[in-house]
View 1: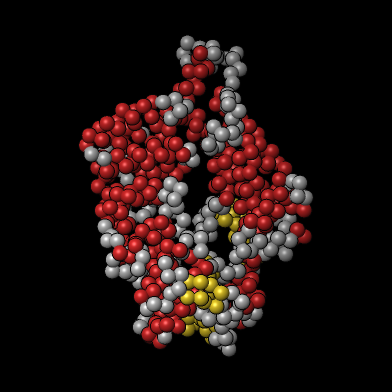
View 2: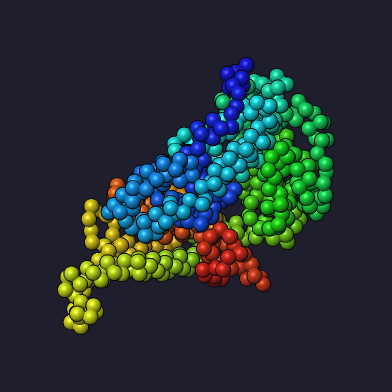
Length: 539
């Protein structure tokens, strides 16, 4: 028996050891439990997410540690440290945004923070199937990257996919079936399932999910299948190849999702069936002649999530053109809401309309930049006017002299120092990209857009189609690369870079309305949002 299996688990010691990682992760991912929004600390959380400077982030983490867990004396002793931070020239503009002193002096949220951290670790204890909670530390290490506590796994996945994996792993372990050499039924692959959970790392856990699940079902036999209630489900399509069911409740989602890693089929942990079902039905495809053990697919049309049994995304083109080349099945799902026209692949002969999309993206970007500058001008108006007064551009009434030709706000704000990428340069470059980016550049890898597309193809996820819907991502990657090349080690962020990140989140959707093929550009992946622009696609 290993040492970690004998050591008595203590919650208080674990909380103390991992407290900083919890706080870091909560600020990086607000929304867990009751952690966000706080009355005043939500400002700190939001700014923590936007700030890339590690030194500044570390200061916020220390602030939150003292705020929530420090003694009264430690809390008071930190106030002059905070005052020095706020009043320093490096951070004075930060303080205007987050009002650090006000947030720190209002300590009413300290108890909420402590409750949130405790609730999180209690949930990890609940999904640990061992009596002595021997897996809690492993779960924490899985969630926290050793590099300052950043998540390597989503909380949702830990509470569902990992919890189910852990339950099956522990069952095999106590039945003395581990270690085990698992052979893939359809491929010449052998996978070793270790007996020590600490040999399972974040980067290889997904490779073990199917071997563990398959071995678990073999060991448990019919007991693993029969212990779940069938629930309420409806068969909505059936032919010689497949059966398609819609689960109406969580029990049915778990029953028909047995052997998968879907969060909607989780039994020993949190189940997300209700979260998805309230936005639209789940379609489970059950092949009658599976190509391998456990083959299943689940489609959630509203969220455009098309997953296999390993909870990995599958391509619609692979699913309906290769695996199930059945026109009736495709028509069924088209009637259900899948817009197969979204599968349009890059084809230069038919994509002239994409230039209209690109123009709309840059039109939005230029307006956004102007609005950002306006907000800055409002914030720094008095500083700007003080500068004009010192340089003799204002009269006695504080107004610009009639015969004066003062520098603009952007020119004032872009006073170059330390080689920074200035506001005026950002605006000029954005305008140049808007005027020169066209789809015809795709076949010329020396252009910004052509190079960005080539890099995009090289880095594209293996489960991702090269569709026109990814045009915003390519534009964004082009701008992000340019922005990074312009910034130096002192400058951590720019308005140009912020706009590029916003473009990266845009959604480009293609579908038919009254028989006409159309496109729409939305501010994020959600197709129900008010579009930025729309247009027709010639056929």
